[in-house]
Image (cartoon, rainbow, N blue to C red; front, side, top):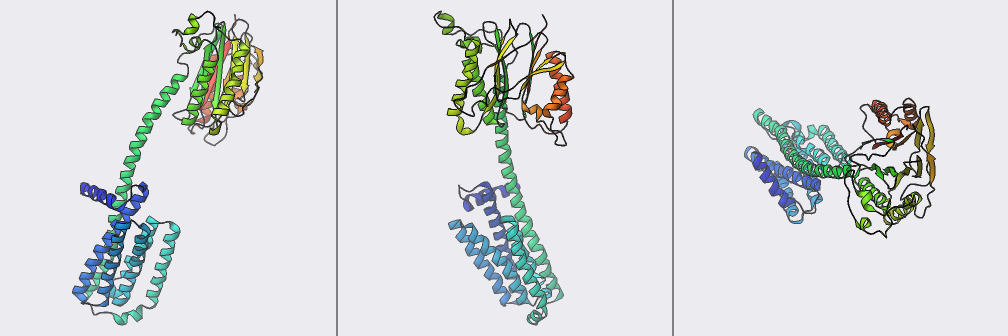
Length: 477
């Protein structure tokens, strides 16, 4: 039975629809054709029964008139695929013909309440059009119903003498018939929905697998293991809101005796943000030194390039030169990728291991916190606009000294704008309270305490944005 339904559905799909039709449009066309065919078959059966019982009366001709008019509309549809023509012809005929047949048979009782069939007009309009048009067809049906009730005694003069069994037969036909049409049409309608659901599920599975691959690639952009920076404890945490993220952090060494710290947040979320993140991170890595091998080599592995072999080429850039590459990256992103309307809030700092000096540029990012054993001692505010938003911007370089025991804490707005089940924000004030309570703790302990407070606040609410934390503590000598 199920195979027969699928076979019939595939046949109708090939004959009733166009290749350019959307799946929803195909479903509408096929379901209407099924309902129309069922009603045509029913009209032939009903006409034959009326002819056998009543003879060649006007009711028989009205019934066969429905068969002819709707049948011709079906043929025109198969040739021209003019869906609206078939739609309105069928709606009009299924609304008017049962009413005309009821009147010709003498009203409600003699006809067995033939007007039951007319309710298919607003029902089908609800399926194939919209609620407003369905209400219009229902209003017309109610008007004819009121007219039929008012003039029922007048129509009864035309009643044909029929037995009680014949009246019961007519009544049964007019109750069971529309129900069968509705049942079979809904069966085909549900079958089409299941078919589309299967396609959507298949596509969804493919997309899910591709997103998993994308997430794996993106995870590889983040440091698998944080490099060891002499005299520093480093801890990071990353939790994306979706499969792909726009947040990122990075820690890498810049010989001689320096380390770079990066934390950034790309506008929006999803695939576009992930690609923009990968581009920005790669540009920063490559432009942070003239020797790419020193930047691109993972911990414990050394790549070799022409920079290692040619003594005439410079091996390093000065700190201010590294930071000024942000200007070049900004111009590139704004000019080459400005049409996408995306930008990056980013903190980029270069840390001198021997002196504790941290030179940095803050491109519109959340002010970073400097903590000591007493709590928050300083904030590293923006020194320029977001990266990629405006071309030809000069970013100011700022500098601080990390004293022994100080913690440098970077984070993205996925923390401050996290929502509770009551839709309240975590806020920067609550974050500051969390870090004040962790004064004097290690970088690892600080990050754990922030996570604990944050996820306790979020509870079972959906995560609104990516969450990233980077904490660096200068250890006591």
